[in-house]
Image 1: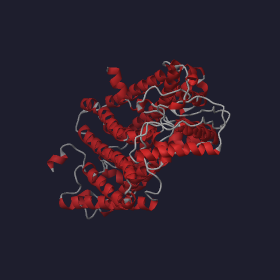
Image 2: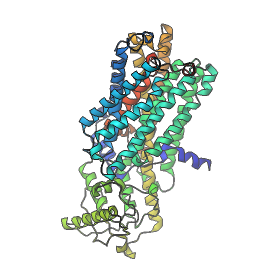
Image 3: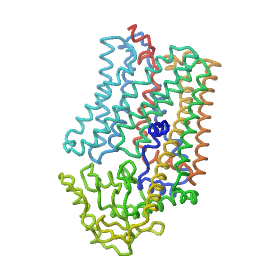
Length: 583
């Protein structure tokens, strides 16, 4: 019971790669140089930290002089909130059909949100006090409200379609969940600063709890993203957690707190690696274990065996093998051929489509339940392809019109000519299968489970390597940021910077560098272990995610780095548990 509960809490166990994502990763590994991989990994977090350093160069006056004298602060607040709003719009833009949100509309959303946000903060300062206590935490709600309103106005003419609204609404829910996350950590930091050494060490236990609960909530609201929930969670919850951890480590009065953070991270990495190894080594994985040195070349063969089975034994969508990723990925010619083959093999679907067009319906929901896959040597011509396509489109159209469709008429066996490293798959409807074509059920079950576990192991490995990357890169870059900040006039307005002079500054920077180096060493160790297990460097998998989802991930980095790094600026209001009530 306890083990099952633990498994359900782990994000890495909730999803698996689609066939399209697996093939895209294989093509990326084959066609990308190591130099490019290293450049992508090293350069990804730099723009967000460069932006925050440039913002820190804007001179401010003492908050004691009032809100009028601090006009530069309101300019700074606008420059900080504008990229955050644009980042939110870009996150939505990635997951909806092209043309709904133009880049012009994206900029307009950013300007409108930032203007409304700054106006609201200014009004609060005029009517109440300046700085506003817990200013960042209190202004999360208005920021999200202005963003939602600006977004709805910008796309009002293009959301008349019910299907488009169904695509936009879940992603807006994801952004709202991230807004809730932005309000949780300031409260934690406010309490943390009031505690003594041992109390801080004990209270650090709350940090993993916030992280766990935040991940569960965001994973629930973004479940429609399938394998994309990994990057979404890592670059929101984990980025928040790492940045707050280094800030707490910087202000902690006991080294025991730092040691506890090290131990906690190591414990979670060991558990994650154990789970990945178990997925590959458990029953049904002999084919992959025998050829693990070529995992990405072996896995398409394993997947093909699953699609050649006479039927999917479990109708549960969470246990199905999806062909298409939620959003298109770059594929090579061979991979496109295989995807075409599997797409035409999709004849009977029991789940209705979730989006408007038949093509996008196949992308969003093609998990192939209850389909027969006997092999055949018959040739395919363009007329037959058109017939299959017409039948599938008719099937989707009938679903959209509210008609119940159990199966399609039996079609002639279809064979698609593909590259040498891909085998053919033939698909006909369930009713058209003859007993002589049915395979051994035990063998079928092994093939399906083996493919499913392998695809899930890929997802879990991606999740772990991204988490290690964030935990290694961000502390190092934050240390560089801190070293630059201490030479700027703005350092005087950060409470935790006032005491960082002389030896204490070097000691703090040394501790942060040590923490970052330990996390980088952990990243290298995890990479070596996963490379030994899968036969390819997980750095390629990391660079694949960072490059193919660059727009969304950069958006999240800008949002969280700009938000969290400036949290303790006195102009934003003190983050003390007693300050708010005293006011």
